[in-house]
Length: 385
Image 1 (tube, rainbow, N blue to C red):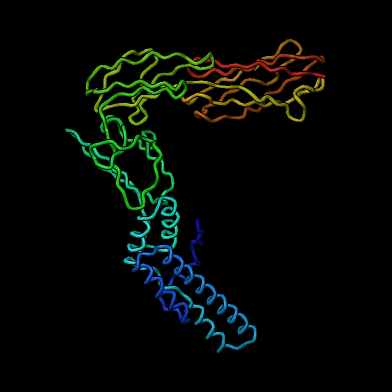
Image 2: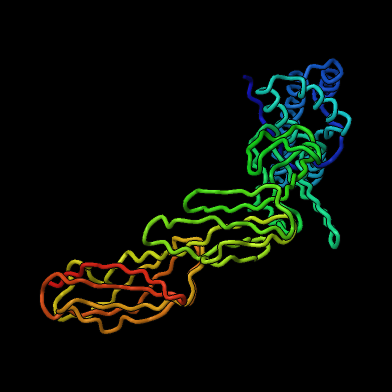
């Protein structure tokens, strides 16, 4: 497939002016003729030739200007300056852009993608977009939103899902897909599609339902045809392992919370998407400042650091830290607290100081307890030499 250079310096496309060189003017005529005859490949080639010729004319004038200034010939420099600003291509018009696009859309897929990208780079009138629209109404509310984004034709585009929209589920319901018409689903939420070559509008499709989604175990259950005021059974959930503590459910769009012990929830409005909340703290990466953790000198105070990582989906709050050592390893300073660790984040804990009075391997126990009384711990071997 023939490759084409895309783009040109802004100065070459800025002004709508006629090239002084006869061959460049002829190329402009050939470009128009190729468009009229329906030859997209020839039209692109002639337009690229115009760009190339304009670049050459500009570079020559620029060099002439520099040399004239070095020689102190101001008259020649002004002439060269004018030539620099005359070396411009007449930008593609809106009508020419429409003609070019019509030819491109008739090409095979690979050539169409390449030529559409060329047109996007060479015409300010071609900038396709996807517009997402969503709306809902009820007895006491009504809303309508739209959001547009420019796309590169043919490239992959990921459609918004429930997490990226963050629309109030109680008012709108649950997003079940996107449609090319307002009343029928064409694509799934989060589906990847090829970007369109012309402006397109996709409509959010809502349904009244309740979804329980667990990102940790990868399970999901859905109650369809749910109505305002219905009593919905909350699914049972199993902890993946002992490090996880189930902390309930939450609809992040409304903030509605279901406690771990609750077995039913009353639907308020048109729908809800409840996400399982899990707490999980991992204590790791014990290190000694200035020493190797496996070779701390005897009778030497050593400062240690370790990491607490939040591996769950719920933020950890008000963690109390305690550290104890086996006989022969004294913890001089090991208690502390951490106010907040966001889900998916980690913190480095400093200030732990120990001393070993005799050579040997010792166990260091570190525990973290949150505000609900849930505890995570880890044991490390510290070697005194």
